[in-house]
Length: 321
Image (cartoon, rainbow, N blue to C red; front, side, top):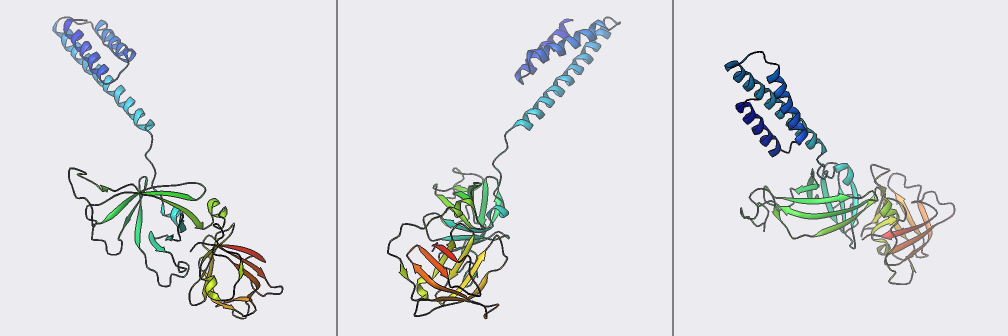
């Protein structure tokens, strides 16, 4: 190997080592350059050009080896956190330790309520819409928000049906956002960390099936008025929800089983009998001869011979709001 070729080889070694090539890689390529030199029958100026050509060939091999290695490294890079999909969110979720429920629609709409109206939608309106985003989702189009305002949520959902969501940032267009290029030249403005815990109650989840009534704050008493029933109730161990509003209208649905709720009216008689009369078949009512109430639960006993029923013969309903 002449001086020029040696310098080319040394340069390639330095270049290759600077890009994390192994010594074995460089030695192998250098050996190929020497073999090309030994195989050449020409001398003098022809050898100079042949060495240059060989150097170019080795350079191509180096770059090819590096490209192949970079491609392998890219394939082995860990993937970023996946987005939370609309299918994962669809349903009604309870905000932990509160009486607030969030209903996520298949179209990305989100309705928030602490009243018994999410099954029928009467008197409700979407609070905002969401779209999937790596590591969570983005909430936008909130009522009263200025154009271009959105909130970035970092979120994870467990197999048991629990979600942890953090408001990670908001766009500068949002009211109250810190619009500072020094803080965040591109993207949402960081927000104070606020972690929200949710449990999916319908469709049923492992977490909601394990839900028990909160601490009883009063002795069980007989239901003597429909106002005792006003609220949103979860049938223990299932994804079935029962809502009773202030006008004694009820709705019954498991979002994982039916597309639309059963609706009807509730009547409480003086003897403590409670009847549920469905709109679609008013001649077939559900009659409960015993309904006991606490702040956090209802226990119901179906009357023998009742034409209809809400669930089983004996049920426990857990108050959600």
